[in-house]
Image 1 (tube, helix red, strand yellow):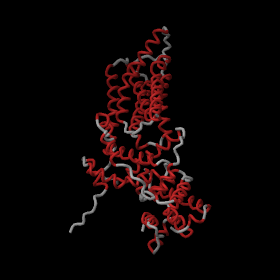
Image 2 (cartoon, chains in turn red, cyan; image 1 turned 180 degrees about the vertical axis):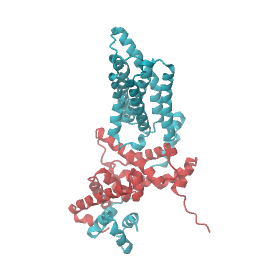
Image 3 (cartoon, helix red, strand yellow; image 1 turned 135 degrees about the horizontal axis):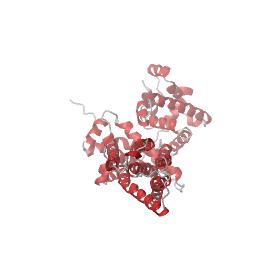
Length: 189
Length: 265
């Protein structure tokens, strides 16, 4: 009996470049939630996060002929997403703030299953925001998007050792921040 | 066991343990940080892994992809190699056409002029490449892009280093000749700006991309004019040639401002 394993990302990508639209849907189903999490962690408005994920896939479509078949799809997709996210923050800093912020709190509390989870997310988001961007990105991609360090390195265009050094520095800083925080955040899950 | 497996273990709610973990921690300093103080950091990072957020709509993405039709959609979905190659080839064609017309007497091809031609061409290549690769370099190089765009606009000011012929023309004649060069350079380079715009993949074209394209266009206009206009009168070179960069800069500012107003609305 043959074991029908799902096709790899690279097989799906090759099919998509060849014009198979269902391959795009499969890739979307695999990565849209992870990208949504990546965006939602730092963005105040869930609709902005969704918009950036949609833009990521639109860019993915436009740039599909740049994809190198020998390379993995996942870091490439995350590179596009990270660039769009950085661009979003750069634009946002230049625009005047509007009263947009805090639907986020109520929506995330409802979506994520309660105040305790929200508190944990908020706490970690706040502490991560104190890290330099290059350390924060590495930790977010590795911990919350499930990328291995070689994949993080490929997504950021850095060497694996540079990425690990950033993770290490980020961890050291987070430990310092944790040491200053309240004891309940250290309780076992 | 590797770093990714350790992270997965934490994320599944368990503190990794065993001989394989101990072996890994011997040589992996950053994973050691996760395990210090009763694995406080590892548990803390795992505790905040968010639940799946509301996924974006595939229908919306497919609708936006379905709108990718027409010539511009076709052009910008070409590979970067092809987009850059076609842009550079188009620019080279314009310069070669001007050179073939032989408007410039051989005596005017001084070493200063040749150096300027070389410098303009080299920077033109860099600007065209960066303009078209913006989705890749975005974010990381905002200031770099801005500086390069400014260099693109201002480099034609180097024309003042061409030896001045000290010809004193009548002001009416001077203005007309400057206007003619300005118009010729701007018109001949404008399609190239259009080509760069058509090749741009940005979902919301950033003003620095437009600025880079404008800087490149100004350089191309000046490159063509170096082959077209034998004048070495500094005032004319500044008013009729280098001013093209300023004009493109103002055009981009107005365009960016209009786009921002539309997007705010």
